[in-house]
Amino acid sequence: MSEINNVLPLPPTNSKIALNIIIRTFKNEIEKTGLTRAVIGLSGGIDSALTLFLAARALGSQNVTAVFMPYKLTSPLSREHALLAANMCGIKLLEEDITKMADSYFNTASFGSDNDRLRKGNVLARLRMIVLYDYSVFTKSIVAGTSNKSEILLGYGTLWGDMASGVNPVGDLYKFQVYAISRHLGIPDDIVQKAPSADLWEGQTDEGELKMTYDFIDRILYYWIDLGWNKERIYTALHEAGQDPQTADMVFNRVMASQYKRKMPLIIKVSEKTIDREFRYPRDWGM
Amino acid sequence: MPLYIDRASYPKHLSIIANNMNQALRIAFIPFFPRLGTTPENFKKIEDTINICLNEKKPDIIFFPELSTSGYLLENLTFSSALSVPDDIPGSLVKLSHKVEIHLGLPLIENGRIFNAHIVILNGSIVHVHRKIYLPTYGLFDEGRYFTPGASLSSYEGKLGKSAILICEDAFHPALVYSLYESGVKHLFVPSCSPARGINHNEPFTASYMAWKKRLEVYSESFGIFCYYQNRGGSEDGVYFDGKSIFVSPNMTAVEKDTKKQNEDIFYYDVNLQDLSAAYQRGGPFHDENFDLNHRLFTLAGQKNRT
Image (tube, rainbow over the protein chains, first blue to last red):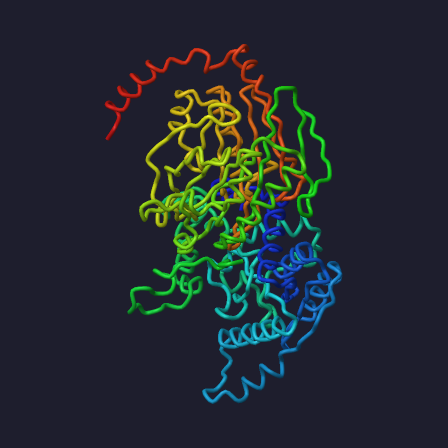
């Protein structure tokens, strides 16, 4: 990776400034709604751990609930890491096992439930979303999102599942920035250094599924999206680094193919004032 | 420049005052945090803030940021938030202008067109209106969709002397600043709604803030003018505004709000007008400015290079 680092170096992350912006905005945006609390699905991974740390700083530990929602295949290490993060923030960890809910559905769905990992993963992510949103109503909380910018851009998440939230404090941070800020906050290496995983089956890793490392993905995304390089310039840089330029296409194609996940559902226009076309109001309307 | 901090009655926060020499006028920089699209509530908060300032430090000028009566990311709320001047300005607020010069940002409706405007209220009347000329409509900005661009530039005689206002991106266009400088303006107020962004560096501030500070320092040094900058505070739709206040004198003294202070803290600064004569005595690029030559060169360069 040293060669790619010469042609597509990643910038430093100013964790102090990022934290200042995120924590103040996170607090503002939640309090504006008249609520004071947040609930976070804690998986044992770095993204939800960082979200938890940010929420604790923004709202106070007493106003944050962490919910760990294991399925029967969830790694015991995930529980250990979720507990570690919650303890460090002084937040009690609530555990809601979704195995019965999930298996009940898998066993009774009229159209069958094969071993399609995508279907299973989506169902588990959406069941977790149901638990979090139900808990948010019960406790008058807002669901805090845990998807980072790299995942959102790749579409590596379940629509209306783990991508669902009221406020996402880490959604404008690439994975390399998530790492930097997590280290700055003192999130333990056990959590920071383990391979990112949706934990859907034993040995699953994000990078194994994506067939690319986040280090590579972030370089392509950062230069393409944040710095506005065109594809040809990125191909040339990869060529100079001795890499197959076409590997960048895997990133470009994923971003384009998942654009629908970053938009509200299409509304077919028939009126003169269609929602989100002519009817344009800020989300903070009156807040 | 020594700063001292003392407790003030402004809600929940500290206020900061920087002492200066005699012949000073005190400016209150307000990092106002309006509630989006709720004009009556914002007017009340504006009046409350002015009264707090008057009771607290008796400033000569109170400087609110861009679109203080409405908030920034208005979209279609622009239409319901637009105000006529002077009819829609509360009488109680106008009355306060007998005690202090008030600078206020608002969506201004005139003949069915809405401008992103800033007004100066002094001694019971509106003495100056600036309509934003350059409306950013790129990136996260969409001002050109809702506002009409202003088409004029003027100055006014305020408590400080010959002054002018450029709203946010207006001040990114040096030609406007130069034009005001040429007309003899000595005090440039820049109210802003500048979203905080840019964390890919090791500097102590966001890239957006550093860009502002550098720009104002260049203007002060090059044109021998005082620059006053006020960004709004708070957040809207997940966008954070840093509430920063900057004062730059032609003596090349830049003073900014202590970074440890809260987003909504008021920054008071006593402007020493003697800085101007000191700067002129010291000399600088503005000392030998040749306006006629500049205009001839502008014309020639424009004719040659315009495509």
